[in-house]
Amino acid sequence: MLDLFKLKFIALSLLLSSNAIGGNENILRLFEHPDKTRIVLETTTKKSYESFSLKTPDRYVVNVKGLRIEELKTTVKLSRNPVDPILKAIRLAQHKKNVIRIVFDLKKPTKTKSFILEPYKNKNHRLVIDIYHPPEKDNLTDKKNRQNEAKSKTPSKKRKPLIAIDAGHGGEDPGAIGTRGTQEKKITLAIAKKLYSLISKEAEIEGFLVRQGDYYISLRKRYQIAEKRKADLLISIHADAFMKSRAQGSSVYILSQGGASSAQARWLANKENQADLIGGVNLKEYEDKGAELKYTLTDMAVTAKKMLSNRCAEDILEKISGINKLHKKNVEKAGFMVLKSPTLPSVLIETAFLTNPAEEKKLRQNKYQWKMARAILEGIKQYLSDPSNRLY
Image 1: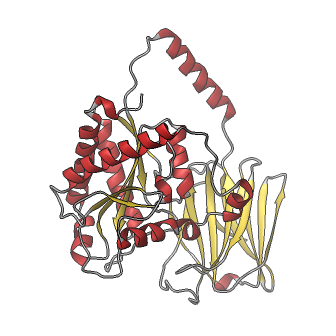
Image 2: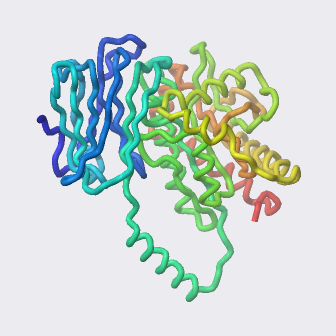
Image 3: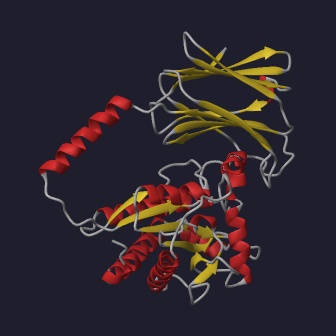
């Protein structure tokens, strides 16, 4: 068998020479995720497969039928994270004449999941393999005990507002792609990290990144992460795209349960809400659990969320207008899935148009990314300066 990596964790990335469905490449990719390692095999035609676990030593085996190793395209490079929590090695072999075997050598037994995704837009048939990272129970218990002891010894302090910073797209979903090949997922993460860095220096605000690396999180999961962390505000960062390259300017959106505020807002929301199909979400899981979670809420709570979202959006829009032309002078509304938390004030920011060559050039600039992050922070601070805008 051919060892793709040993001891050090190596990411399997790709050379994307064909973006259209029906391209002539079969590609193996790997993505790092906080709670799992995801491997995606994209093939030009639909493949059947079988998978099973083995012990002594622990392994997860996937046999893909109708494929030969020489037909599989991979490039190998060192990952930024040298140690994977669960994988020791990945091995490839020609198991039978038209069957390749992928063996995942594991450090310990763990949960695995695999499923097929049908072709969608620029994605071919995909086999998705998720290998979950086992929880470190002892470490978590010790950490909780230390936290509880610390709480008992120190007097309680007034909680700081907590900002959830969501970098749009990621992993299998690159988002919009500019004329120079700039991927939205990289721009959004760069700006999100800069915003997080700025918030970390503020004495009266705290923040965290919903997505910390190049992996995909479902749209519903994004706001659920923010809810679980008890965030006071969700900021979702994007870089706009449109059918016409002359479209330009920054925009700020809040959720609309009814109609969108403009035809373009409706078009954009529909496009963004398709991200789960591109990013590799097993939609059957949602079908099994129900399309939406059921909440018992008072009309007052929902109304308060809408009001605060709008106030925050207006403050951010005002600050962004100082560094870039606005696409719309007012806050826009559309049915973005990522904004659908029933109680968490949520705002989506389109920082500029990647499909506009001049704005793509700006979005690629480190200086502009810092300007945008500072403008967003100033808008957040202005919003929080009014005590009536706080939910606690």
